[in-house]
Amino acid sequence: MRGLMQDWSLLTSKILDHAALYYGDREIVSRSIEGPMHRTTYSEIHSRARRVAKALAREGVREGDRVGTLAWNSWRHLEAWYGIAGLGAVYHTINPRLFPEQIAYIANHAEDKLLFTDLTFVPLLEKIASHLTSIERFVVMTDAAHMPKTSLKKAMAYEDFIAGVDDDFDWATLDENAACGLCYTSGTTGNPKGVLYSHRSNVLHGLAANSADALGLRNRDTILPIVPMFHANAWAIAFAAPMIGAKLVMPGMKLDGPSVYELIETEKVTFSAAVPTVWLMLLQHLEQNNLKLSTLKRVAIGGSACPQSMIEAFEGKYGVEVCHAWGMTEMSPIGTLAMMKAGMEDLPHAERIKIKLKQGRPIFTVEMKIVDDDNKEQPRDGKAFGRLKVRGPAIASGYMKGEGGQVLDAEGFFDTGDVATIDPDGFMQITDRAKDVIKSGGEWISSIEIENFAVGHPAVAEAAVIGLPHPKWDERPLLVCVLKKGASATAADILAYLDGKIAKWWMPDDVAFVDEIPHTATGKIQKVTLREQFKAHKLPTAAE
Ligand code: ADP
Image (cartoon, rainbow, N blue to C red; front, side, top):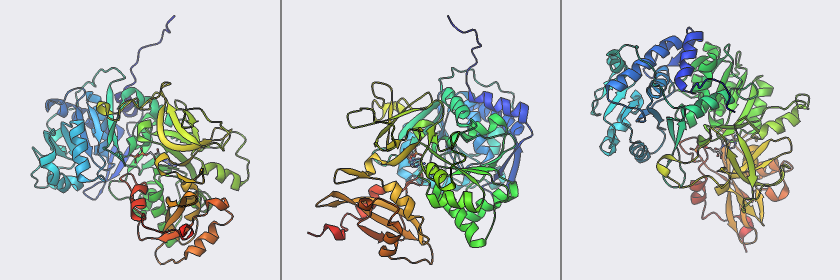
């Protein structure tokens, strides 16, 4: 017997309709690329998104066509997302931090028909324009007054692009499984691969990500998504926030400590989300200038492991609750969050921090397990390591145009490429990316955990642990550190600091100091490059 409920397609356009109708006057404030702050509302975004859709239709963009965006977080970018998806086309966010050749590869692979770009990236696009084979028009997200002279094909200012149409446009009636958004993973090995979200996955993920023990956003919240819309589907915020009509503060291109601090205080931000490197810049700014956070209540930290010192600073010093989250582009992207379970609230502070250091428990719609090399499920005892596999309605079933081949196992699980433990309470902890694990004497050493402690040393700004070949143990860890400006520490100081915090046999065999640690386009430590950089490094313990 079938249920007798209405067949209401889960479409992203429904989210914006809801926001405009019930939270129409709620603000979206942006630091514009042109400079000044810009203020609009959900009601205006709704109207302008329909004009975007109508203008795209006039341009010949049809259902299923890809429309690229190369842009920071702003009201125009949000309008573009909803306009593109509302027409039934596919918004394709491109990460501007990728190498120019990768940007060209991705735009061509996706066959983007039109590209919305911020002013910032016009020079970059002009340089690669001759390699962009599918884009028929470039729309620069600005007005006529700020429109630069450019050689880009049929370039037009965004405000002119939508000026020629009104907002009388009916959102496309679509199958909820229709493609909605596209985001390529940075692909540290091989070419970038496209993750293709559907309307259904975006709506379901927005709902799931926003449950009370996940992001838990509320109408009264003021949300600052520092995580760019081009990084892993903006961590669901572009859908979750309008669902409940929260005020949005879009930071534009300025993500440095002082700029972020100013936005938080002037707009009275209560919730924000970013990767650890961005939070590090804010915390340093607060520390150096003896500042307080007067409105911020919670921050989501993910993309890389959140160090203990960061949780302690936010929660202990500034009274801001940390939601440590893990996920990946292929998961829409949120997988787990380290939120306390019933009964854990009363644990001593130090115990709760230990729990928060883990990546956490899955949101509903995410199933997960760890397996060994023979795909045998490993116990959830907090000790057994295994490859982390996931399954759910907002998790990729394959990549754009079949790149990478069959990515699901026989039970439909996707291999995250992460190695993790799961404890009896269901908290998952990432040990490493599978390709970065350090195997010493047949046992795994968690580079993430050592890095986490190392950055707790007062002189250390950033740390990375890599495995180097060793005649006796196969591999032994080398700790690579960047020191804070003006700070000094020796290898012996740092090793002494780690002593007692990690198992004796996890102790790095050596510490090297560098001015900079290489990062990927999404801010992760590029260990392949580091290993290459240190391949001639002789560990003192490796001498025969
Ligand atoms: P990329 O395009 O660089 O792969 P993703 O955001 O999709 O960007 O990267 C996902 C990966 O980032 C995960 O598989 C995991 O290795 C890492 N990651 C994300 N969040 C965390 C976290 N909280 N702790 C440790 N690693 C994390």
